[in-house]
Length: 270
Image (cartoon, rainbow, N blue to C red; front, top):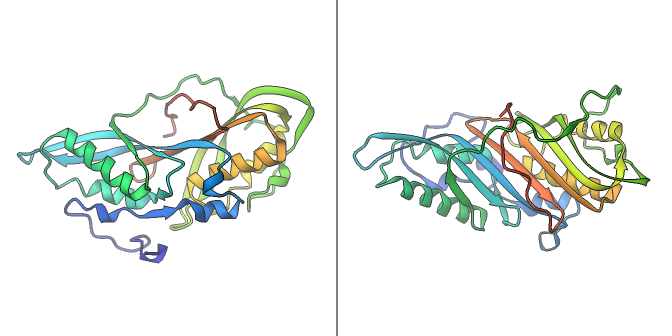
């Protein structure tokens, strides 16, 4: 199957029954090859956390049930899962009867694990919305910008004479879906210890994704890789919280080996 086989950009019949074959896995190695990464020697650890807001199924007597769910796909899985295929897959539960709620969770976990090629964690519910996260925004910097793509790591610079530990954020990250061309919006949070980043350069770099077509997970891996190579931090954490589309949002995180995951939460824009 290729991206030309995807049911995107054309009329799609609404799924009338549960169908695991709707899931469309994409090899992570394809995107990683473009940024010089090999699956067997990743310079980071990470997770792709999905939030599903539109989940429904029928109980054993045919009465509809509704819920939300959090899905966690490890960055070490051979495949990522294309977002619209995930939406269609979850919609296929709408008219299908399940004996109890636990069977729904077990079914989703089994199918996503098979598609990703690694164990996927699935739980009902969503994390809370963060109200104060200690992130310093760089979005109000008074800078002129005229570079909107492709991503330009030449903007990145750091002061080797000043070692700092800080957490910076920007809500100006935008890229485009490589399949549908639809815009993907996110707030990215970069925590690090190392030479002090030039903030104006960092903002210009993030904005240079604006016309770029790449999957969410690959954008975060590109940001982590570019910062690591250009600025040589002692440790680095990059998380992007993408706004909801089609009842789903995704929150990829990549961090230096040994780093703990960021606190689990959602943004108001999600």
